[in-house]
Amino acid sequence: MTERPLPTALDLPPVDPLPEATQRYFDICEEKLGMVPNVLRAHAFDVAKLDAFTALYNELMLADSGLSKLEREMIAVCVSAVNRCFYCLTAHGAAVRALSGDPQLGEMLVMNWRVADLSPRHHAMLAFTEKVTKTSAEVVEADREALRSVGFSDRDIWDIVNVAGFFNMTNRVASATDMRPNEAYHSQAR
Image 1 (cartoon, rainbow, N blue to C red):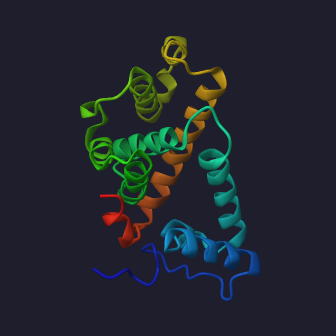
Image 2: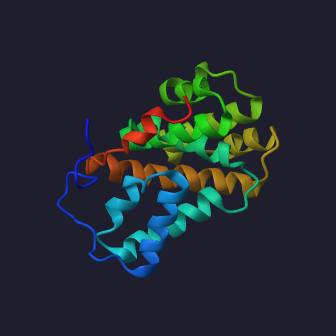
């Protein structure tokens, strides 16, 4: 299967030429990842939106946090599994496989996180993430206390909620625009 010329079903071609800073960012992606993720290509029709998206993504997923990068990717996959987001399950499932060194873990989280042999910390984190995704208005203090009881700080809980919220938003955008993952994700870290 070949990648379509645009990463979504919408006719929104990228700004041409890309601003110098954006082109540098894409060049870094190409150098480090071997590709420019289609989610970035999808936003490239509006550089201000691309910059806002990447700034928030980088802050939530890559900045200092009490959550490891793997934990944040696990949250992304849990949310995406509930929402059945093909793009994010493919891309972030690959990230879980790569960061954990465990291809089975990536597949289990994509299909049903409960079948994975998780620590109490990770089980509580994903149960909370699932509840935030399905019924956020029903989250109560006991849910936050369950996270504290396995070692999460209030700051960590804030980060869990924000990562879950971000992926609930991006899942909806990706699904509603038929955003397709880069083919390379399918074979990574297997």
